[in-house]
Length: 542
Image (cartoon, rainbow, N blue to C red):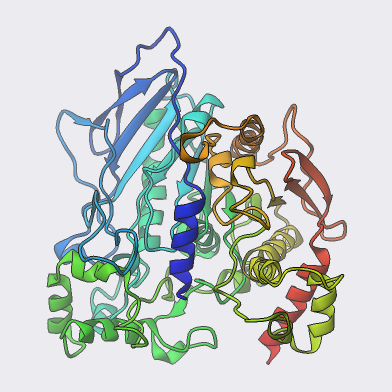
């Protein structure tokens, strides 16, 4: 099963941060217009209760025509007031389920580089509010900045910005003629370039909304968490943010950490280069050659043909046609793991963590306990003791834990350790909470993406059911930790359980437990993560 398809399915069935209804204060009136002057012109948002919202602000020109597969260009200017009361289009993506009918998802378009701002209604220029910037997940092939609400952050005095970035082949694509075109420009990672363009827009414009351009926190989940790692290690994003949060974003090599752009620098994780994959895609559409004429034909393809129903190969078992993120040598110059090991990342405060039962399979696959344990090689007995101590652990649970630890949990510990070793504070968490309404579906713990509604302070009941009181308590706690971190770089505050800076010797984490409490204690997964780490090192040395 394709890895991105696994993440897509999990995210669609686990969690999306939902917009919440806001209580109505006496002033200002609901729906009242509010304006801010950007460098491109005045935008007119709306006030709902005690929060003002600006939607659909272009932070770059439409990446269409000759701008397809080019870095984001400056946004257009306008006269008068631009309506900013409605979200812009999502970036072009396949509808769900992937691989189904042709076309692209409703409300998605190639013209999609928009951002959204939530702020306290009383804020204005000069307020210098902390800014927190959400990078949505979705396996780099789906998602949107319009699916999360900043209402609860704004109530805590923190300005939220969300944005869209190019996805799939429109966001990550290499081709020999592209590598030669505009040699002064970075190549391949157009989605990452969009993220950097959005951060530059924030630096230049956010003060007009009342935000502080010198107090910006980036945070993201899944592909958004991977993006955080890329931004931490890229030379092109330095100085654009001051704190970072990676939720279920990994941190080790091998999972969406960057494919080599050319065959000259292939590695053991990605032996097929991104340029080769681009040629495969061109051939699938009857485009031969690798010159400028072939590139012109690729740019002339309809956007639905580029999205290609989310397909990643030219037919079942065919050659790969989608690359994902790329090591291009300009923006992504190395993987996060190599940057962290050498201390070359941005030295900023970090929150990092994962959920207790991220995925049931997909990254590590086996058909039995014996086959699963054999994947640890000479560490088989140690793995058995860690994952199956009494011999009674269900195979499905063992497989879930091995996948969770290899891809997310151990890499998060590695990253936290690397940050504090090189002089930056890191706060490590484990999210184990499962709403009572979801416990039959999440038998082994919190699934991939299930923490998102709690971080945004907006849990929701399944199938319209009332929100559980415990859900509300966990949401208030997580949203406050994240807001405090955005304000000061320290998540701690009045009324919250203490969350210490990670200390590798103590190996203490903050766990959002299944019972709804948050507790700092030695990591209960230590034996599992230790054997996972040893296994990773052994594989790397071979």
